[in-house]
Length: 98
Image 1 (cartoon, one colour):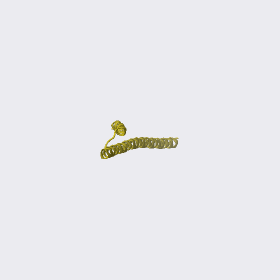
Image 2 (image 1 turned 135 degrees about the horizontal axis):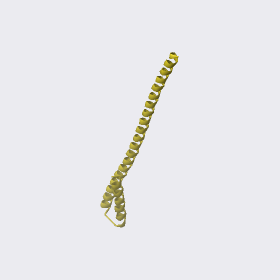
Image 3 (image 1 turned 90 degrees about the vertical axis):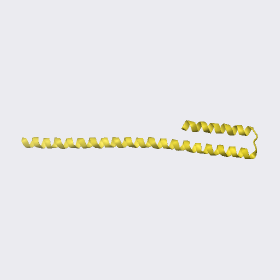
Image 4 (image 1 turned 120 degrees about the vertical axis):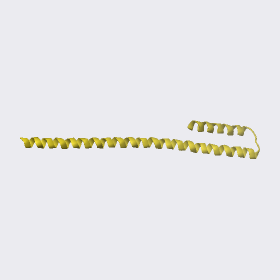
């Protein structure tokens, strides 16, 4: 889609350059220029929107990766805490047995 819009902008630029070489009536030239400007403006807007959406999606993926890694870290901490509790209880039982 982005490539298509870029090609469209190049074609519109070429049409405007060719129009500058030939003489058209005022109304025809104005209509052609207006249509090229409208299509070019919409194309630029769409290209900008697509690039912003791509950047937003990559940022969302990055945030999801960070959230997953923090969830994994908190799960590891909980496992270690439970292991420490088990070892403390075993130590207490061993000290009481002596």
